[in-house]
Image (cartoon, rainbow, N blue to C red; front, top):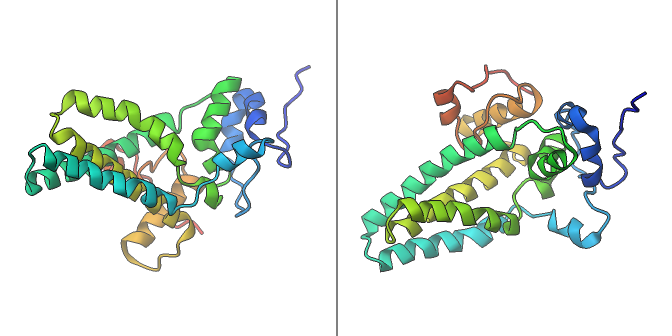
Length: 233
């Protein structure tokens, strides 16, 4: 007889969720709406690394984006060319934002370590969507993920364009993380922000296989994953 594993929410979660096996996907998409986030690790030092204030993101990455644009101009780009590369990077990020969210963050997992890694990457956000300290990406994790993306941009771009283009990607990322935080914890009353909040809450509470954009619904319209509009209270 197989005994069904049950997660103890009063204990550190990270090394528990892997034991759910096939049941993990259903469990992680049943949100607990509470501003009090769970404990991830028993070790206090590891636990601190999982918590990030939203304002840390622009504080860390905006200066880096500005420096990258400066590097491109030092390498010969005119201000107009640098601006064009920057905007191109923002557009590129918007497609990356959609693709990562749809194909990586919502990948189906079953094995112990795959469930564990998915929970750390994105599952924790769907299980505890109002956990304010685990809504944005820790800068250390972002820095690690930047390495392959920077390498790809360098490979397909020129030495003068690559820094500004990557600066645009970073600027797009900052817009993404800060917008994402606002959609969960802000209270927009009208206009585009209110529509974006409804659209994103639909993703969390009604149709978690649709609505993968955060800063924009553009790519959901392009690829047919825009959910039917419905107000979520």
